[in-house]
Amino acid sequence: MTRQLFAVFAVLAYSGAALAGHTRPGYVDGCQSADDRYVVTAESKKQPDGKDGWEFTWKDTKTGAKHTGWLVGLPYGLEHFKVAYAHIFVPPGGETFAVFQTANWTGAGSKPPGGKEKEVNRNPPDEFKKYAGFADRIVVYKKTGEVVKRIAMNDILKPNEWVYVNWVQGNLYWLSEYSDVMKGGEPPRCGYRYFRVSPDYSVLEFTVGPNSDAVHKVKDLGADVVNYRRPVFVSLTDGALLDKKPTETDKTPVRPFVGDLVKRGDDMKNYVPSLDPVRVAGKVVSEK
Image 1 (cartoon, helix red, strand yellow):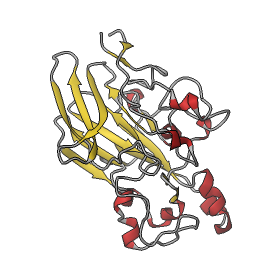
Image 2 (image 1 turned 90 degrees about the vertical axis):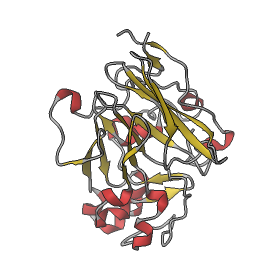
Image 3 (image 1 turned 60 degrees about the vertical axis):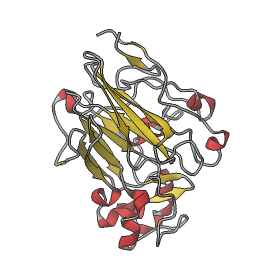
């Protein structure tokens, strides 16, 4: 099906303070299935209880069927200390969709108990590991909004890997960047540096290890700690952790966007994402 321009919704607003310090513009990017049929988008709205939230819309572009509901665990996303960096993925069939939060806290805030922002957190207590701000890294939903699975950092990280968790204000770091998107600029979405996704949006890949800041913080702990990298593969259909990297072409994770790197600032703020970022760069696309 021919891919055409669609209404821009993924970047809903931008605060002038968002580029201060380390914080980039917030976003929750939508997605359409690889066959163009199913589209899921999200919009920042007031929930019935008056609290800020993110409302999703699931749509079958062939039949016109539509579902709406509220996403869980997402911060408001448009403030310096409550910024959202989230990516929606729609696997084949459209019966489920997944939301991946890369470098932001959940709505719980940024003060984990027993942790220190400017120091290495070695062997942190359980209350630190189970802190609500580390929750909901990946959430899988039914198309009607029911939660299938919620995955927290505590479900992913091994005991020796908490040493790589660090933060700067509203930005939470726990993954290692992919080097091919860190040279000559920045990816147009800050989250793109931290993951790979299969062309059919059914498998997510990311690497646990030190980000660029953590490398400096753990340098005194030895080469094994500095050079540590562990790839993780997750099924975006049901949230299962996979034993190994898939070999099928459509399920082998690839760079999560096409197109050029950008410079921090207006180029990033004004970037218009694609609903199909592994195929189309910088344009929101959808059905006829």
